[in-house]
Image (cartoon, rainbow, N blue to C red):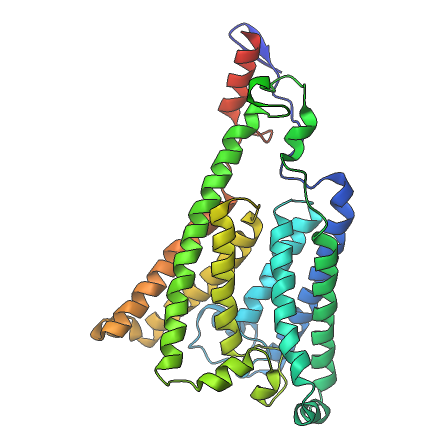
Length: 360
């Protein structure tokens, strides 16, 4: 209780709008356990690569941000490292019962499923199956893919039904003090400010995602049409891992490029419409893109190509794309994690104005 202008203002904590409903807590726990299990498998493969490589832990840590550093062949690459970190973050959010974990978990499951399906298609090829039999770790690789499939299906089955009622926890406080009846039944004036801010932040983040997605799409089309890569092979590698010839946990570059563009565009359009809460998905994928962009900038700087990029128009445009990705993904991370709220979950100034209005 706080005294203000001779009156008493109730600032006790109410229902946390960021927490999942009690009936969904089981789904969030299943999601946290499933994602943490698969992240543990990827961490095990990462440590095996460090042990089998030429360097030690220090060299690996340098290689996390310096692509020029030579750490020997690795089972997993930077995309898998960042994806592992993403899974651990989402698992932590789900364990804490945060609602923003739902969209992030669904994104993780979709990416897992999209990465496993080309492997399943490749297993129909007899030559590709023989590669598994000839590899001493082929059984473990196949088991890891199978674990990814089970985790993806478990998360989808658990989180798809875990939808919140429109209006969220505010709808459960109908008739409580501080509720503005003129704004409609169950509308909490204290929730108007934060909700509006979240919608605006979502739309800004969506716009940044769409612009980057369209830019990356343009570069991908340019690469295919310029003859730098065989278009038919690249497109087939998206749905059939047997094209690669050797079983691997790391997806091909064609898959990471297309999946990045697809996620940027789909998430961006959903966020622009602001009809679904995709803040968690925006946050974790922007984190992945930010890490990859920082790693690219470090590589350009260390190798000396940073200044030489301005020698050609294409190099300057590529550098401009990298600079935009760095600024845009940083902005999305800041917007997605920003909180304009007081210590008890509601906007401080808005809460005091509501209490004053009720006293008047």
